[in-house]
Length: 270
Image (cartoon, rainbow, N blue to C red):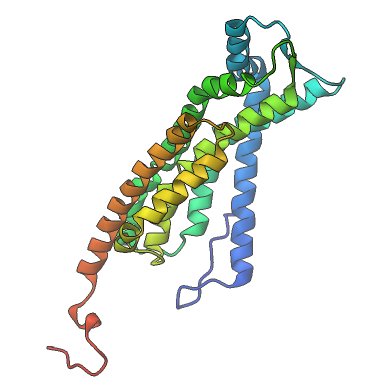
């Protein structure tokens, strides 16, 4: 078996467009294989996953006592299509360590050895952060469904198409998981010299405002409770990212020679 082709760089450490595209193709292939293997596991354990995802719906049905609330397969192929989509969803979750690492490795390829050592500790938090966001979404789901179904007029039925219900649930969970990756991408921008810790701290007010706007748009319920459940942790993670970026900036400034900050027409003490 031929060894994997490593990214070729010129003496200045830069990659050509073709090398970038080949690297992207390789990482996409690895991610797709991992996702497919995870989807196979999801297919095998589909009944258990279906029961877990449908539990908030049936909990609401039992609490409301409304027998007209039910999940419905609209046609002969709907059950098969639903099993495929849920299997892919499970594959996305199970393969998250692989595709999240591949995404990080492609976005941040040019770190120095010191920056890699500092950032690897935060990279190790990618998967826990993503899964924590997914878990918080699952815990929030019963309240969100109770609120949404509460708008059903008295005497009306609420027969949900399984594709609509599970599409809502899976998107809700994935959005929460991806939102929790905010600090990782902020650190990535910092180590890439795009933003500094001081710059992020100066703009914390508009950043918090944007976080709350994003939470209001991302959460499908109109109540403030669900919005705060997403926005609150994101604000905390934003300031955690500032702390990590400050450590990186501090190490970077210590390694910077004193003469680098001198003006062009100023003589060095050397």
